[in-house]
Length: 177
Image (cartoon, rainbow, N blue to C red; front, side, top):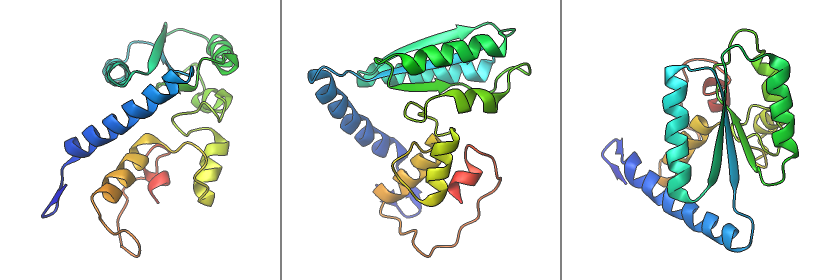
């Protein structure tokens, strides 16, 4: 899957999708089909595309997904109420609140409200703390997890390697360091 210095991400993604599809099929056959909920506030064009891609992937893999689209002027309390309802719903196994959120909503408040057991983005403080401590039992933000998976499946040795990580954002930079 590595040719010279190129990694065939499409081939690796196809492998991961097939492995995931089989795991989802097994869970569904046991009566526990995975349920993922996306929450989007407003009509940010990039967010619409990104959530649409996630919905399509869920459909291909057999994950039951639902998207809640709230108006741009949604108050924080209303979004918190929805998050709490999703946390309490036993058929919802994962919750993804799509950023960016409008200015009247404090993103940290919302991400903290998502149950750490359903926080598929890995933004809850418990999941962030686990990541910083090297505890692999929590959710990890998708981009760093994907980079790690690409390198691992490509046989790239990272132990002792020197790398440069640009940026210190919570989604990519901090988790990669």
